[in-house]
Every structure is written in C-alpha cells, then in structure tokens.
Length: 224
Image (cartoon, rainbow, N blue to C red):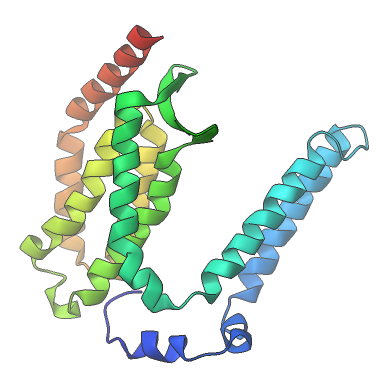
C-alpha cells in the first residue's frame, strides 16, 4: 500500500477467494508456521511430554492468529484503505484512556480493562500506525516524498502515539513504532538526507525522552 494509482486496489477487489489466496506469500507463511511448530514442541517438552498447560495454549493461539491473518488477507484492500485513519484514531483514544484509567502492573501502566477483557493498546498501535502511514503514502505522489513539509503529518502520526507509549513507560514498544515507521518511510522513497536529519533531531531529544520515561515510572509508582 505505497504510493500509486488505485488500479491495484480495484483489480485486487475483483479477485475471487482462490485468486487472493494464490497471491499470498506462502513461503513466509510456511516459515512462520515452522517456527511456531518448533515453539510448540519445545513447550511440549518443557511440560514433561504433556500438552497442558503450555503447548496446547500456544498451539491454540497460533491457530487463531493464523485464522485472523487469512481473514484479514481476504478483505478488499479498499476496505482497509477507508478504515486506516478511523482505526488509527480509535487506537489513539485507547492509548489516551490507558494514561487516564489504565491498569497498573509490574511497574507500568500499559493495559486497559474493557468489560473484563484486558487490552494493551500499544500493540494494536503497531498495526494501526502501519495502516495510517500506508494510506498517507499511497495518496502522496512519489516526487513529493522529498518535501519536508509534506512529511510533517506522517511524522506527527508517529510521534503522538510513541510519546504516549513512552509515558506508560514502554520504551521498547515506542522504539519499535519508530523503527517500523522508518522502514515505511524508506519504502515510500523518502530520501536519505531526511533520515539523517531526523536521526540528528531524535538524538538531540533523547534527554527529553528520558525525562518522560522517568515521569511515567514515577507516576505508576504513585498510583500503586
């Protein structure tokens, strides 16, 4: 979902289920399945040759995740294009809700209780941010990716949730959001000098980020 015409979305939407399945990266799917199988075998061994309590749970979760992956892959890409920003906005609201009323555990405030279901919105933001950036760069002409002013909106899309995640505090996930977004910028054709400039700015604000991290930790300790 990078910059280009909407013809690719139209042609994909006209495919049947069989054609869509044929366009999946089966090599990658098999590799992921093999890695998951090794993990299940290791948990089976760690459980003394018993499926309970770990191996069966891991296998069930992977099967459910694989099913969700296929379901998402079969949805018309134009649907994800339309929902990209609403999904991002909803996930951002959840991140704000974590800051206001989130569950505190292990020295961090990263979870929110939704009717008995505990959710970590920072994990959802990894997907939501990817969708939002993909939609933005899809609409941005390739020759405009070197215009710094036009890159301010996607940079804001990154920094706002990353800042909220740092406040939880969850520096690791915040860095993953930034690094994954940087890969999308690179794939969209953003020139190297912009990456260098952003790196220089980011390096200079590390002390500020560290202060936010400490504030988040102190806040969690006060609420426990």
